[in-house]
Image (cartoon, rainbow, N blue to C red; front, side, top):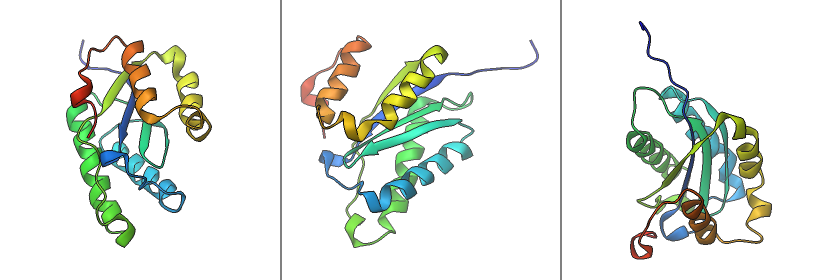
Length: 150
């Protein structure tokens, strides 16, 4: 086969450091656009980005030439530098060190998009920590609670 082809959808979830409420309404759209631009530059197709004040969800494709770890490193590094230029409210901004990435079947893309779109409503009923634990359980990921949060 002369070409290498790939279409791997991933749902990425990570929070601000210590889940501080940095992602306010006045910055979130600009932040999401910035992250989308970073992903596009990395050759990722961005399907949806949304979140609430202390965490973010991203549905995108994993570029064929980059690892998940490198993708997350680039997203976090560039967006953290960018947001710190937006004023004193964000001068101490940081993302948590860890993240979760979960594979998504192409048949479930619309369901995941709707889930990400409804984050504000969803989090009236469940905390970020409980939501994240639910994902870990659903995907049968073993974890140690002592190292899950920062």
